[in-house]
Image (cartoon, rainbow, N blue to C red):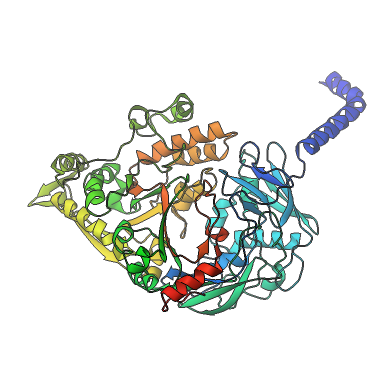
Length: 621
């Protein structure tokens, strides 16, 4: 031992310069790999090079001006959209700028907005944003690194619980100088983190210092974005005006966008009332999500004359998942066989034929309408992800393609109900006197479907009728928006009609959708209550995907496990947006992969005059 230590001591002086040189080499390598850039893509290169003038899907010469009236449902009691309390006003995000702006014609790329440049090493273990020195709040004060750091820390400590999941992999935020901030990440590969931070809506530290961030407020907050609040009446309307002296109006990421002088949201109790108001000219534009209304409600004289327009706008977005969402926190629905059995009572084909005018495609994936959706049997790459969990996940993940129960659409679903009955009996629920009861406790099988819109009653009621044939007593309860949101946030439901939007580049948000920690956190989007260590590991593998190929394989693997967990009875989707609007607008010729961008539309003054004359009652300007 002694000779060994003497040997180490004799070489120590020689090691110092070697280690020092190695340190310099690593630093130089890091500097070489991490250079300031104008933008960043999730995988690969950005579409737009440095010095680009504007996005390709906008009209850079779009005129500014005019008023657009939109609609919102329910009501609002706050302008603080960053906390779980209260109902935030629609459109409030327009008053804030983010560090970066995403383009709509790429899967996931961002370009500098508040940030003049972004810098991150090849392993993306940290990210540095250098702010534009010309950035200003609406009160004229400069936007600084202090604002960015205060925003991040405040959202983590006092914001909606979802922020804690979204930013869970961020170790610290530090100010390097007045306009430069650096975020360092926890160990583990997460290539999305720099982009996630690029989405950060920055708040003014000096404004909030003497205000309670945890409380709802109807005091119009200070922002830095292209719009600010002009006037409002809580629960009735809110109007945003374009900030003419907006500091960022000439940035490439803003050219051709934010063209309306005024944007007003009027609130309506429900969609049916809103549709009638729209046809009477009370507002200008809506995205229609009801196939029946789309097919039948807009056949009015103004539409035949061209004053009212209907447009099917194709997109290449992932459809995500909508369905009957089953809350596994409830004892009855903890059993996967019961959840699987209930799906055999939903007759999508009949609904599509008789209710939806054959407009929809049945959803078969949480990432439908994209390359991320699992199809067929697992590929070699997917099996590499899934094999370590064999025996811990349903065997069907490896042996079968998930296909939801199907029918001929004629209302005859006896064969499906037989399968459902078999599964229920295997789960210990038998029929006695035409009622489904637990074989051990004699408890009757009953649950409630909670709805927020009467539109879905026509979907739920036929489902309930089929459940009755299985001896199950299910009921529908439609409540107002505020009560629905409150019950959903506290997971106070058996079943809801719900869903999850998905991007073409899924990442950290999956923790909030399916993660075990989110299952017990009020306000999360883990509506189903999934608490599965395998799902947690698959989420982390997805987040750490080093390239697009790996991301696709890992997303498909997660998709398969979720599908065979039977947490949702899948509904449907369409590969286009249904837009209906009064013909007062101009719009760009190009529709990007993410779909029509209403913020790139503008008011055509000549069209607006014609529409107003054609229908004097129309409240458009």
